[in-house]
Amino acid sequence: MDKEFDADRHSLNRLLALVEQLGNIKDLDALLDRVLLEARRLTKADAGSIFLVDSTDNKVLNFSYIHNDTLFTSPINKYIYSSQTLPINNKSIAGYVALTGEPVILDDVYDIPTHRPFGFNRAFDIKSGYRTKAVMAVPLKTSRDKIVGVLQIINALSAEKDFVTFTKTDELVVNYFANNAAVAIERAMMTRETILRMIKMCELRDPKETGAHANRVGAYTAEIYQKWALDKGTGSDEIKKPRTC
Image (cartoon, rainbow, N blue to C red; front, side):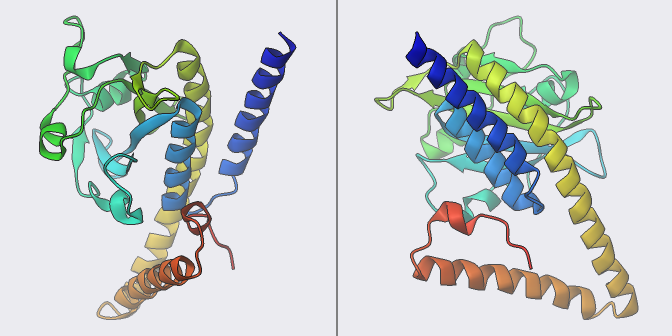
C-alpha cells in the first residue's frame, strides 16, 4: 500500500511539474510538441495529434501537430498535415469533441458504437499500413471554457508494446493536463499572432523585401541550429526546447 501511495504521489508531483513547465514555453511549435509528447508519455501512447481552432474561422480545425513513433522518426514529421483542415461538426471524432467540449474514448475506432454520430476515416491507415485502434480525444479548454483545439492520443501500449485500451485514470490525467495546456497554447497563439502582425507592419514599409527577409532569417536560423545540434549529438528532446535571447 505504501509503495502504491508513493507511486501515486510521484505521478501527481510529476504532473504538476509538467503543468508549471508549460507556462515557460513561449514558442507555439515547441509548446505543441511538448504537450503532445508529455500527453503520450502519461498514457504510454504510440501516436497522437493536436488540432487547433482556426484563428480566422472558428468553425474549422487545423491539423497542427502529429507524432507517430511507429511510422515517423524524423523531426520533420510535424509538417505532414500542416495544410489540412477539419470542419467542427459531429462527423469526425476531433470535430465532435471541439463542437461539444466532451472527451471521447474509444477502444477501437473500427468498431464505433452505432449511437455515436461520428465516424473514423481509414484513409491514412490504408495508405500508411498503420492500424489506429484505441483513441482518446479531449478538448483543449481554457479556464474561461474557450476551446482552442483538440488533443487526440492514439494506441496506448502495454509494457510488451501491445495495443491496450485507455483507462478512466488516463482520461482524468489527460483532461487535467489538457486544460492547463490550453491556457499555455492560447497564450502562445496570441504571441505568434502579435509577431506576425509586426512582420506585416514591416511589409507595409517595404512590401517586396522586409517581411520576406524576416521569414527567411527565422527559417534559416532554425535549420542551422538543428543541423548544428544534430552534428553535436544533441538529443531530440533538447533540440526542441525553446531558446531565449
